[in-house]
Image (cartoon, rainbow, N blue to C red; front, side, top):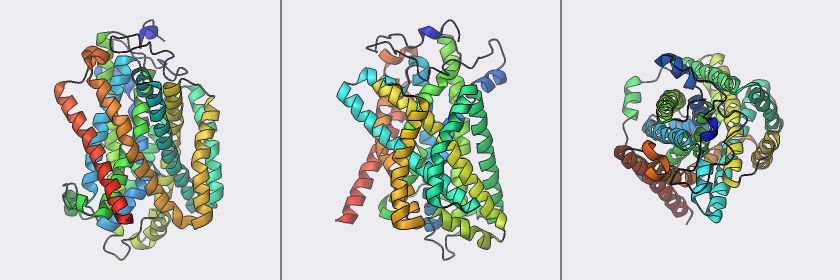
Length: 451
């Protein structure tokens, strides 16, 4: 840790209190930045946090919504994936900017700015979002183990509680080990879907048209429900808290030049990493559209059904095997970031530290209980709708993370010279309003369908 480290997060005019304990103290400022090195060496040194963020954008919850969207509506919802990914790139860049410029993660910034009751309210909402995300990871990993090894879902769900040991082991040996594992699994997932696309042979002209937004998405209640699920699965609220913390693992200097450089490289890192998430999410939907839509299997939204149908429809068992392997990698990858996000949120909002294994176990149990109940009552058939519902819950929580983030990064009193420029403010507030409006529309459509 450099000599400037202790100065991070001092009281700026717009903050009421010092940041207090640094975010993720066990790895804070632990990765050295080579001073005087060239562009690419520095880029490599800063690379990593963006990929930890990106895995949350390709977790099993994405699979459920992307499969359902492709099978039911063909390539139409590709535009939603693209727009959601562009929103994510902007918001994650703001998250990195907040963490580097202020020395606070988003949860710490909320605790500083808001009253105690509001802070507790935001904390509870964020915990619900993390539980919903963890639910998707639990179900995804359990389904993958069932497909590959024949392990009953109940046992697979229970075994997911043990992944806390892997997270603790890697973090103990250095944050770079966590990042290296994440990147390796992303490469494996991307490679698997590259082969899947080659086997599915999609209509590339129709794929290109699918990236053009269409008004019919807003007018079709069922399509809108899946679209909001895709948005919730793509723009992850807990990732905003996560990114604002893990960018501080780099040992950048606490000067204007040092922070400006750190913000630049962190933005490049997250933008490039999120493009990999765009490829994987689009690949899942394209594969589902090419394989299931218009072939009598339009209602395929269940991951297990997709696994069973891929081999006969594509003519090779490799299709199903690669699908399950990628799913397992996706679930395990997402658990790594869920561990860190849970720790950051609890410590940042309410300033309480728990042992990492205990915090992770609590989060896992919150996800395991509803998963076990659904499996016992509905069997495998209940997992698909539960995955999609978990992503809609994430989307409904998004405004409560997005609006504070945009507000903090727009204030010169808090951010000093690193406050967002005018055009970024306008774009960021537009994104925040669109996200809120889409969620209000979803609630209206949902309640109207029930009445």
